[in-house]
Length: 192
Image 1: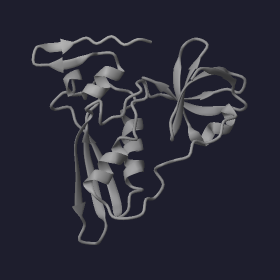
Image 2: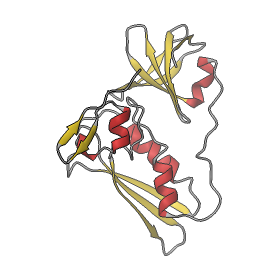
Image 3: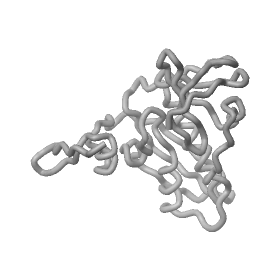
């Protein structure tokens, strides 16, 4: 995707990778880089990257993407929780947090008052990741919409430290990092 758009009104954006919130003013020209169900990633003329929530889609004169994360029907299961986690993408990479290896665990505990608590242990690619609060909030917001969930908690953990070996082979291929075999990292080049 790479279309230039002039913002129609001021809108709040999150700077990537710092996570700082700021206002992009009306008239700013941005290049739409990626469109997700909960946000748009844009680049400004000076190559600064921002995340704009879909609530500001009108500033970009775009329709809000159809969300696949509305309240789901049926029963809560571990599989449903993991499927939901796969809908959360790293703001800088076209790979979801599960494939990146950022999700260390996902547990479901039934509450004595009814409902369930889903607890996720999640790492960041670096300890000083400015987007950690943004990612944490997105994971919690998506999990709380699952059936029978009364609480969603994300614990950001630093032990064990995340490293690229935690990524799935699919993520490595998507990022042109190759695959890991018993002989080590194997580079695979793709035609572009």
